[in-house]
Image 1: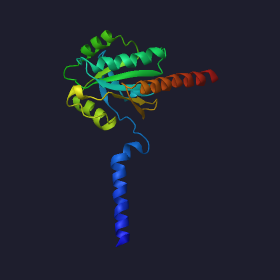
Image 2: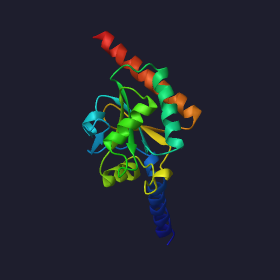
Image 3: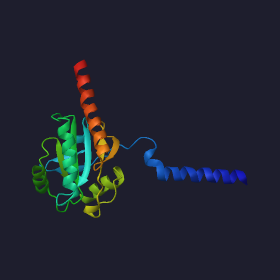
Length: 193
């Protein structure tokens, strides 16, 4: 009888660990294939992520408060590391694709002065929901104003590497160090050739 209880407890512990800690144990997932459209009305797919380090976040263009602030904070990081390289890109996916057409995203990008290597994406709501909720685990987008203020770092192989809170100064410093090391490492590799 004690052996059965022990086995049941071990099984229950394994299930609880997987349910509650599963995302923290083992490798983070690879980004699956997807198809969205950027602010220039060009296709943007998983292929666009490969070979670059990507900082990915969610937003909506008509947001009056947190979204512009998020983009200003990320823009400070972008400018502080002088990204004039194709090694790093920023990607922001709208959580309001019904309103955020490519032309609206283009206006938003121009208004916020984000410059090159920053893509604003729209597309099928089901695709965006799947990316936010199931791939990046950043929560529901049923109410655009309730989207997450966390962002994701995707490595050059298209794997989710890390998460950070855009509104946290400590997390932004960690992001800046990560991006600087990416540029330095790539430059060292290139100089050795």
